Length: 192
Image 1 (tube, rainbow, N blue to C red):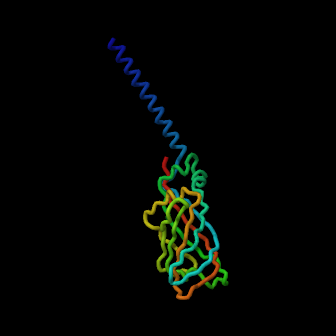
Image 2 (cartoon, rainbow, N blue to C red):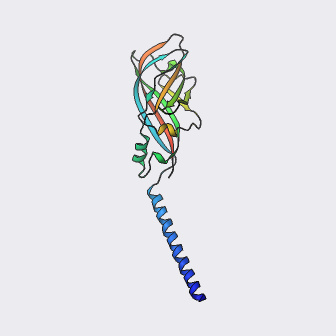
Image 3 (cartoon, rainbow, N blue to C red):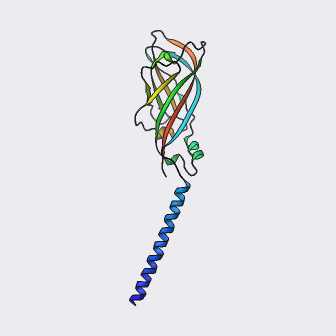
């Protein structure tokens, strides 16, 4: 009787062991199919025209829609991943480049001394995400992202927008119509 019980236990243990190894290999196969480098960078570039006016007082501009569909970008890059897999999103770079101005390009970005970028959605409060201090470049505003500012909930919205706040170097207002190109990168942490 002891031999039957010991044999039954040995066979049961063997079956359970083989089953668990098979299950683990299925999990490993699934993980191999969805390989996501962490973190990933999602670039976002847009060209737009804005009424450009600066003085020594800060002027906040109307919101610029980003038209960023993060879910589509993630799905396009990684089979099986969606916006629901985003665990963290942070701004890694943000640059506003001068393209042209309506006054024969005589007014450029060097008229901006300091700048701030804000992000918002219809359901989330506006928050500052990057700054420029003591700009001297006529062709680019290179923003420094606010350290560790979590943007995941903002980027999940398809109605996300940004707003510029600019402070100039001139006592008298400087006004033109300016075409700018925004180049930015968002660092995304995706998990399963």
